[in-house]
Length: 133
Image (tube, rainbow, N blue to C red; front, side, top):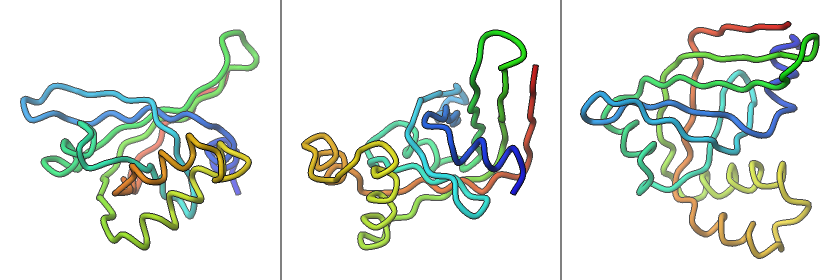
């Protein structure tokens, strides 16, 4: 596994950029899971990012840390996204994402997020840029 892969697996917040209906960029910070060279994000089909992906599946993303050298590192990329809508698959993936952020799914917020998530945005990155200072 590369440093980039280790970094993407270890971080907690990814910013996803989608393209709106009028070609306006939309950026949102999200919780995510990086697995098998794919990025998975739980969301709801009512969100702007999900609506945008239905119209245009091109996305960009960024994960970065640090404000002082030598501890600045980041990964950004571009790719195509699709929505996973199959209920059983969405539930399984959502649980795996939420367990990165909560110790248990018995937490009230975790349960609410699990119940509200009805799709998974899956990004297949096609291009990466990595920086380290």
